[in-house]
Length: 207
Length: 432
Ligand SMILES: Cc1cc2nc3c(=O)[nH]c(=O)nc-3n(C[C@H](O)[C@H](O)[C@H](O)COP(=O)(O)OP(=O)(O)OC[C@H]3O[C@@H](n4cnc5c(N)ncnc54)[C@H](O)[C@@H]3O)c2cc1C
View 1 (tube, rainbow over the protein chains, first blue to last red):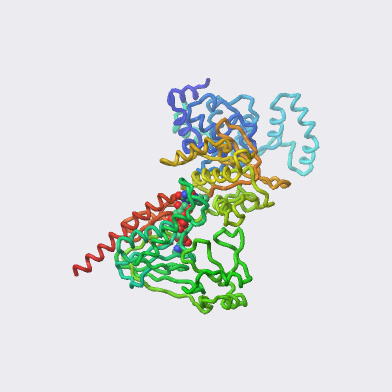
View 2: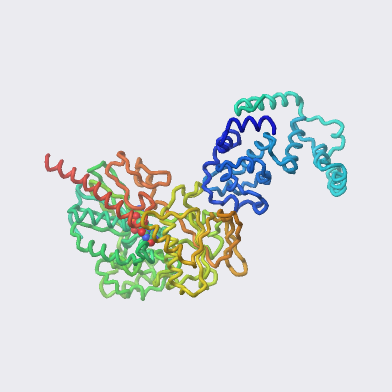
């Protein structure tokens, strides 16, 4: 277990709802849920969720910390916003799903092999490095995220698409060697670092 | 009925539904002069459209008859139908009110014999039946209309039909040159009892009221159940006129929803429970007809809970704890398919029914802001009691989403407040 998680358990002993309110984006809305179920019924991924949103909200209020933070459920959210437009209490459900996923990831509790989590991480590392997405290295990282042979197989499958993108100048192989990105990526990185510090201080993350 | 000239000791009541009629009668029977103004051609309001009343399951027409007799007997009550308030000026104890009266084209000589309706050919949509069927353009709103007097629809004025109606009348009751009139009165206090309208179901996009024939509102079901209603008391699917056997109720259709009405309309749970008994009554015990009620939570207060218990004991009525996510239509059968998640156990469902009834929410028919500038209203537009309202008092569903029992209580309370104001006026005038 990482330090963040231990610190949070100490700080919020027995009140997982409080913990969510303080640390999860839009978490203060969780208490507003009246358990009507319209979000769960409206989700296009509904049948594939272990716990649909209104169940997650109830679990948060029931203090089921490990079950909530360790589930794959909120990682399923595709941001279609069906639930948000139908929620009779105007709860920003989509944002809470992403907030929960992000929080679980920070605490090191998110499921390790979850593809959404891994893609998000690859994407974030990529964009924060140059300030702009390097599509070529992003695709390659993504293809090879399950190892070398799986990557080759996927690349062969997608060869025609890749060639098409190359011909229409949507994919530049040279970007693998040098990619320019924004003018001064260092500045962006120090801004991101500062933002993290401020957030960490506010939420009480250790160091 | 009276011919007394209204003074500032008069109480004006706007809207003659159960609340307005109650407030007017209570005040008149306490010896106050009352002017009652009703927009439609008859008193009665929404309850006249109900087949039966919960909790006693009696016919509303019966209570209406009692009130009509009280009105006949009241020397101090003056009624204007087809009338609306044009303007109100002044302050508590001293209002000047202007009332605009639309022409009815039929005078007091009318005996409600119906000869004019027989003579007229044109038809109009029947507002009493929520436009589900048509009536002749010379009509009486419903069997128990008060006053018992026909109306000519303005669309036929100047046509042959109007002439035919006039010629058919043996009593000289038809006056084709009747014009709009304005009456100015004084009043000391005003009771605003303009009631409610069903929320516009078409705005609840996922339920497809505007797209699917077999999605109807609870108020439309009330009209269907009435033996003198548009379907002669049968629950017929609009798509194919087949008798509906599997009927779904969707609770909180528009209510308790920030996208629509943020308030709980309070009566819809009881209304659906009541309507489920209509279905058991229509189709005998051994038939396969079923009712399914989809709900967030069932709200029946006080002794109304006994009613809920009774319905819950009925095996033909199923309860599913779920706000339905959306409705689709089965193109071939015209059936409605309800989609959602049963929150007791989190099972998904895609349930097919013959007919879906939206337990539609109530909104005030005149919002507080439209009653007069500065009249206090809540977020939904219901009139709130407020010292700055002067002597304008909300009553019944103009003030809150209420059942008849509570609407009548609210009306009596408003009558008492109005009486106190005009008593104050009388005391000042006696002293001066
Ligand atoms: C489906 C359904 C079923 C129901 N069943 C029951 C039941 O079984 N038992 C029960 O207790 N309650 C029931 N109710 C609730 C009941 O309908 C209300 O409690 C009742 O109608 C309230 O009466 P009201 O006089 O306040 O309003 P209304 O009945 O709406 O009367 C208002 C009157 O004011 C008039 N008016 C409107 N605007 C103006 C204006 N600008 N100027 C002049 N006049 C105007 C209208 O024409 C009308 O005559 C049901 C409601 C629904 C939706």
